[in-house]
Image: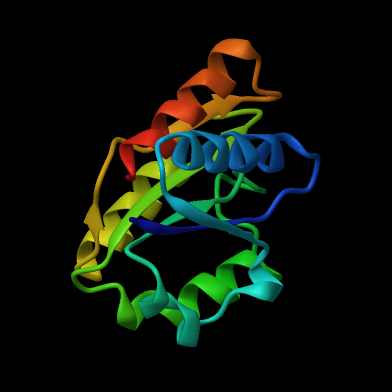
Length: 140
């Protein structure tokens, strides 16, 4: 059985809804899945999971949230080499540049992106949540 962690930060609830749908998709596909916020997840936990899905919305000038999520993620970067990960998040402006930068940084760290990253504009609707469930299922 696959063991998957879903780690997210959400300011408005949009990315939280996405994270819960990713968890649902993974669990429905038979994976043991745990949901964490950045304050609950750390580098010591990374090797306990086969795959980790990270979720963070675009903030400011299309960047990761910098007080909780970015510091947690930075603490893991040196340990991502060979690790299977997925990325997701919501945005309200721009064109998804924050996700492209995040993907590139993960690839430079040697992480294996196991699926296409998923971004949803504003609040995820039924279609957006279904895509999140599909992302979760693809992690299994």
